[in-house]
Length: 230
Image (cartoon, rainbow, N blue to C red; front, side, top):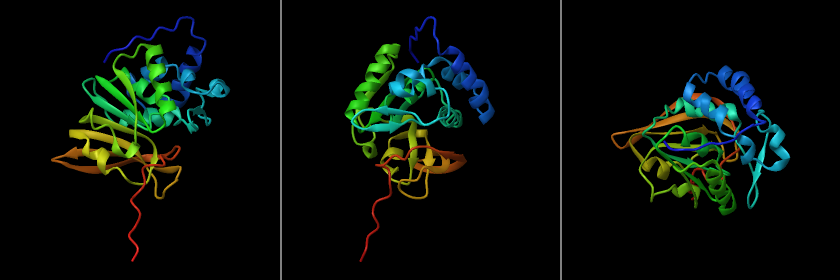
């Protein structure tokens, strides 16, 4: 866990505090370390300029690479991190990392974190944001979402940032023994709502545990394989 965050005379500090008090804590996020990360990491640098004023609300905000991407609402992301039982020794992966906000939160909670996104422009944004914040233990890679990051595996924690309807087999295979994968499971491709779910790998197999109802943007690449039709 290594970082340097240096923002003096921060005009957004009060907005982050209000977000924690009115959104995060009231959504059963009792983990003090997660709360502190939400107070510290400047979400406004991860969103497009048009959405800076909404960065600490639960409104829809976008970050643009090759195309626009919706960021998961802070209260949903904070709750996912709380339920994932993040540890300082964790090697973490964020799938669908976009401009890097979720990975930046994790950088202050884990040993190292990799942000993976299919969009090279967003991956480059994440890299620039990590450098700006001095997050030496965070890196950004571009590549197919379904393939994960095999070169950096195994991972103790994988956060799939969005709603998925399947296609998690390869990612689960990149978990270390005792590792956890947390995401939102939707019931159909393109779903924007579902059940936040924690998968834990034990003796080479992963078992799911439902957590809470949640909504977020879909992760388009993570869907079940097409059904065979005779």
